[in-house]
Amino acid sequence: MLEDNNQRLEALKISSQKEKERDQQIIREMMENEKKLQMQREAEFKKRLDKIQAKMAKMADTVVKNEKEKQLKEERRLLALFNERAKREQEEEEQRRV
Image 1 (cartoon, rainbow, N blue to C red):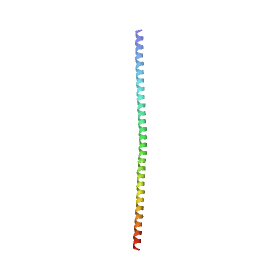
Image 2 (image 1 turned 90 degrees about the vertical axis):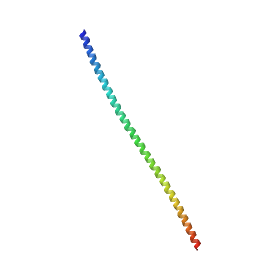
Image 3 (image 1 turned 180 degrees about the vertical axis):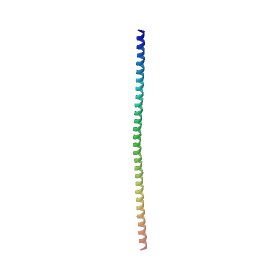
Image 4 (image 1 turned 45 degrees about the vertical axis):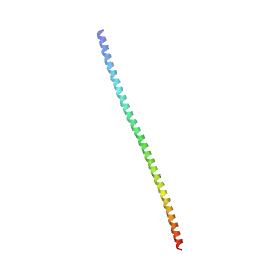
């Protein structure tokens, strides 16, 4: 009977040790899975951030382009006014000579 109790106690210790090892293995696997998920989240976040930054850069380029077009349009308008004024002054000068 004492020997049976010792055998059961030993079997219980072995069973407990195996269960503890299984628990530790499950915990390691869960930690690895969590680490993989975290890396995936970080990669997805970086991908979204890069996409947003690309859109912002494109918008900034568009704003700069539009501003340059406005400036060019204004310069052309001023040049046309200046040329018209110069032409008018030249015509007036010619009329005075006549």
